Image (cartoon, rainbow, N blue to C red; front, side, top):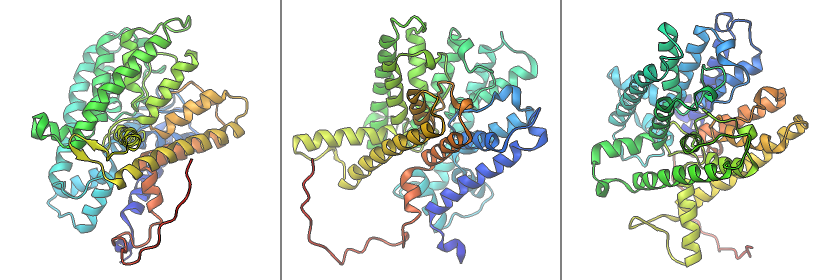
Length: 435
């Protein structure tokens, strides 16, 4: 009876929180670390892994044993697929049935209107993940064979493949990918894994099923159009901005890589703490926009940005917002504007609070770190380990809310979540001057 009263929004919120708690407990075990780890650092790493963010307060290769690294890898995988996806897939494989409450929960997680064949979708999502990570793993074996050998080569290749496809950005290299800025195969492999993971399972399955552009859904078309625009624009802006920076050796390949990573994967071949302010602004914008919905990426989502921008153009022209011969509903426009506004407001508020706890740190870097956490990216200017306990906890909350979504968090308080809106009562509309 209690289970039936719980809204899917609350289940999602508590589910992710439960996985974070389990991960924290496992990372605190003596077998997980060489010399122990504080509760706050364990909580931070668990949150970063489950929320596929990539920020870290400690060096993973030096702090965690093989067992601890395996725990982090599993947490990344669970966070990337989502605990709902994994749970429902296991039920399906065991021959169980997904009831109405389960389908509603999946709808909220996937952002679906309910038209999907859930069992087929979930199984395909898991299959796509396994195939992509296996391909990435084999290419990593070739790309990293000059640096590692034996079991270490196998483990690092696997960990890096899982982390890249799930847009996590956590690594076992010790210094990120700063030493691999000239490893073309590793850079391209990581970029492809990140881009495919960031497209979203709905888009990938649509591409495999429909095969022709005309048959793609409007959602898939929007993601496939806006993704290369963001990647190419980010590449050119970062490259041009860093051309005359004596502390940066940015070339087009690494500019493309960093533009790709800004879509919510935290690997870095460049030290962003040495970047110019203009480059950091571009980086923050790319991180804030993020990847596609129902993907392993974060941010407000590229579709939200597209709808927000298209809605503004439609409003200025005084015409309905038409995309690929379809009109975007008023509800969708409001949702996009809400998510964009609340996301920016929360980032500003969190950065301000962190600057109170850590007044000696650069406000520019604090804001970058906050956007990185909220958008589940993981790119860092190097100040995360220097944060106070209060600063680390604020970033934990930002990573958590960024992963479950602001709308999901707010709808937890929605009463009568399983009933439609009562349209029997209408009020006289108010005239309020805006602007």
